[in-house]
Image (cartoon, rainbow, N blue to C red; front, side, top):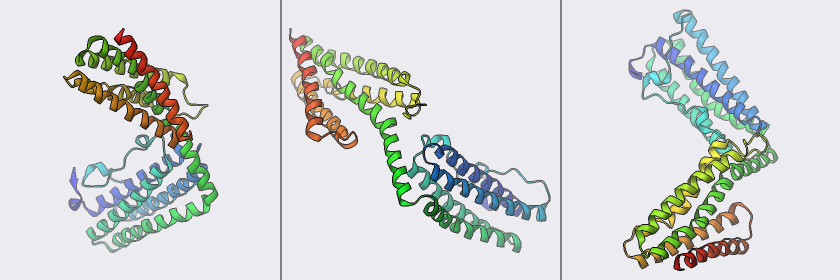
Length: 318
């Protein structure tokens, strides 16, 4: 990697060209990723990609005048300390707040780069263009605000925010809640049955760990295979399955870990306290995200958990 301070004027221009091309493609990727769910926001990023294309055209014209037709291939990751852009696929599923925040960060970083680059060159025309582009990046941020106002009136923004909330519920909260409920409730019976049947903490821990991991794998596969998300809008099946499986395993492991305590009755007491916390968290999630009345959510979860808990104790004590 080269230090930015060691680059020549030709190399700085080549780096600026490749950076503008990359930013334009990122904005185009944002637009493509948002087009189905947020068409108004997609238009904003399409116009911002076009603006980056105009910056690139101006840089290429100056480069050709100064250094000829061949443009050196210099990219961000070739220069030490230069800003790097995360690939768009790492943001999927694309959320409005994440994308808009990333766009603001891109404009800020690019404007800083142009100001530093202008200070590094002595050629008047190059210095002027780089300074103009630094100002343009500031204006680009204003352009983004203007495009939002033109394409995203408050009503449309409210509709897109509500759509974003619904997709978050479908793709994250629902599979996560299903897994947490299954892991927290279904593993109560085998864990406490093993505890009261053996009277030993370690055996209960082993059974709980096996039940939690097994349930996580089972629920993960079940969720991933339930549908591919193309019609329901529930997102990528692997992501849903991973969320569901992980939360299932965590739900069971939470009240399994106390059985690492050697003293049996201390472990039982701590495990029961953890179960109460788990059920309270599930009730809160159902109230907060699923619009379930708080009393109803608490009763449903507590009643189901109590039945499974009692089943485990009865079977283990028999």
